[in-house]
Length: 286
Image (cartoon, rainbow, N blue to C red; front, top):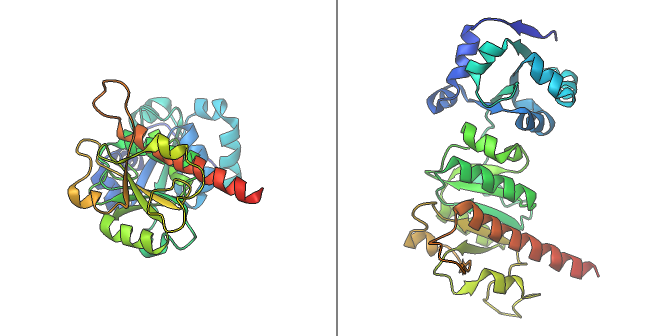
């Protein structure tokens, strides 16, 4: 379809600007995807979600590959005057998409596909941390992410930006009850580990242990199918949340820092499991 040139602020532009507010995103069931990398990923991995593209001439010129994707998929595309575009987003670098937010799935179906590595954030209220954890889980090959009730909104623009498009690469469910999820994970054969300073097992010691803990062993095994519980950035876990885990795993700190950032801790744990699982798979093939 022909591209529409927009030289002045319209009612539609005002609606797009309003999507920076959560109440407007919830009202319309829509969200903003800002920046060339995030727009590229939604064009590749979730094109059916796209309602409209908003671009500048400079954005088109700087990213001909994304322009090519957009022309092949042919969504409604508006070429916007740079002064108007700056009102729509300060961070989009000439590329902005409006998407329909995905429909919710049943949490009971989440573990049906033989998941081996899942991350459950019991209550993540920092959008930058959440986006980073999504990006890390994606890079580590995790099977999905679960967000507990009270977590930051998945399509908060800061979450989407910091995930750099990974939000479109793997299944993510929001508003889950960690206790219900823990029961489902255990029924699906996953051990539940949590990263906590009170843990009796050291993450790096476990990473150096090869194979299983032996028949009938109850020790944590990083190569086993696992769901990692990640606590709240400021408050960690409640006693009830800690009780959901089969094992609490501590990450050693050899310097005087009080604690690790939640995204850093989650990254270390997820990559330790991913590495152990891949190593165990390679040994089976040999």
